[in-house]
Amino acid sequence: MTTVGGTSTTDAGAGETRPPKVGFWLLMVGVVIMLAGLLFGYDQGVISGALEGIQETFSVGTTLTEVITSWVTLGALFGALLAGILADRVGRRKTIVIAAVLFILGAALESLAPTTGVLVVGRFVVGFGVGVASVAAPLYAAEQAPARLRGRFVSTYQLAITIGIFVAYAVDQALVNANSWRAMLGVSAVPAVLLLIVMVPMPDTPRWLMKQGRREEATAALTKIRPDVDVEAQIVDIEESNAADADQASWSEIFSTRLRRPLTVGVGLAIFQQITGINAIIYYADKIFAAAGFATPADQATATTWAIGAVNVLATLIAVVYVDRFGRRPLLLTGLVGMTVSLFTVGVCFLFIDDVAGSGEQATGGGPTSAGLITLVALVVFIASFAFSLGPVVWTVINEIFPSRVRGRAVAVATAINWGTAFLVSQTFLSLVDKIGNTGTFWLFAGFSVIAYVWIWKKVPETKGRSLEEIQEMWADERRDLAASQAVAVAAEESGTDQPR
Ligand code: BGC
Image 1 (spheres, rainbow, N blue to C red):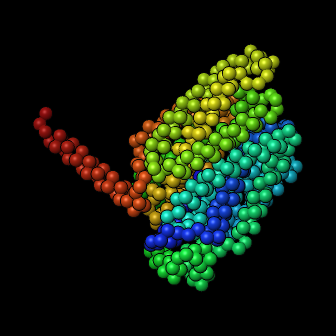
Image 2: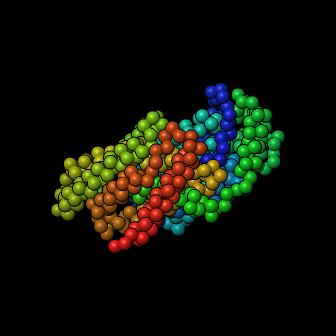
Image 3: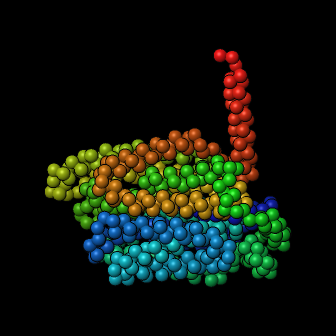
C-alpha cells in the first residue's frame, strides 16, 4: 500500500491530552489523502474494463497486454523510491502537487494515445504518480494528523484505494457498451485536477517547514490546521524531535543485523500480499470472468467485476473497524484460510470450465455454467478475505514495526518491494495462464497462500495494543533470547565434545 509509505518519525501533536477537534483544514488533510487513495485505486482498477477495447483498437498480443497492464506498477516502484527523496528536498506539499500533475499528464497520454508505445508511456507516467503519492500522501497526513487519529488517517487511505478500484469498475461498466477505453482512462484526470486545486491553499507540514528552519511558516501552518492546540508548545516539540532525528539513519543501517527481524517481517509481508494473486484478479477480473463463461451478453463480465469492487470496499471497512480489536495475526491468518480455500476452488472450477470450453459447449450455451457461478462466488470470497486481512493489515504492520529513526526509509524499501512483486505478478499472469492454465495458476497462488500462512504463523508477532516503543523492546527481547539460546547451544556442543566416547 498502501500503499502507505513512510510515516513521520514522530507524531505532530505528541503530548496532547485533550481529544483532538477536527476542524475544516484538518478535514481537508483527510480530503487530500482520500483523493490520493482514490487516484491510486482508480488507476489500478480501470485497466480491467479497458483492456478489451485496447486490444481491439491496436490488436495487441499477450505480452503487450501484460505490459500495458503492469507498467503502472513498474512506474509506481520507481515513483515510491524517488518520493522519499523528493518529499525531503522540495517538501511534502510540492511532492503531492508533482504527483497530481503526473496523474493528469499520464491520463492525457493514455486517453489520447495514437500508438501502443504512447499508451505504455502514459501507463508508466500514471504509475510514477501513484508511487510518488503512495509515499507522500500518507506522510503528509501522518505529519498533520493528531497522534490519536493517525491510525484512522492511515486506514482511510486503504479504504480510499478500494473505493477508487470500485469507482473504476463502475465507470468501466457505464462505458462498456460504448467500448470507450479512452474515456475510461481519461476520467482519472478529474480527481487529479481536484487534488491539484485542493493543494493550492494547503500549507506544507509544520515538521518539514521546521526542518527547513522556516519557523514562522511552520507556526502559521500549525495554527491553520490545528487551531485547537497550544501551537507554541507543539512547535517546541517538533523542534526537539527534529534535533533528536538530526543524525539521519543511513541506508546501510536498514540492512544491519539489529533490524534483520523487522525488515524480514516487513518485506515478507509486502511480498506475500502480492504473490498470493490479488492484483492478478484486480487487473484481469474481466478476463477471468470472461474465461469463466460470463462473456455474454457483452456487459456481464464487467458487472461481475463491479461486484468484486464493492465487496472489496465493504470488507476493508470491517478491517478498519476491527484491526485494533481482533489484532493483526488473527485477521491475517483467518484471511489467508479464506484466500487459500477460494483460490483452490477457482482452480477446481477451471478444470470443468476448460473441459466445457474444450468440448465447445460454452460457445453454444452462452452465459456462465455452474462452475462459472462457483468461480464468481469463490472470487468474491477471495477478495473479501484479502480485504479484511492482507490488504490493510500488511500496511498497518509495515508502518509500526520499524524504529522511528529508520521508519521512512525502511517503509520505502518495503513499499518498493511490494510494487516490484505486483509488477512481477501482473506482468506474468496471462503468460502463466497460457503455459500452465487457469487451474495451475490459481493453484500456484493457493500454494503461496499456504506458505504465507505458515510463515506468518511462525514469524509475525502480534503488535496489537503495543506502543511503537514497546514493539522495539519486543525485538530487543527476542535478540537477547536468541543470543542466550545460541550461547547455551555452543556451551552444550563444547561440553559434548569434551565428553569421553
Ligand atoms: C494493495 C494493492 C491492491 C489493493 C486492493 C492494497 O493493499 O497494496 O496492491 O491493489 O490493496 O484493494
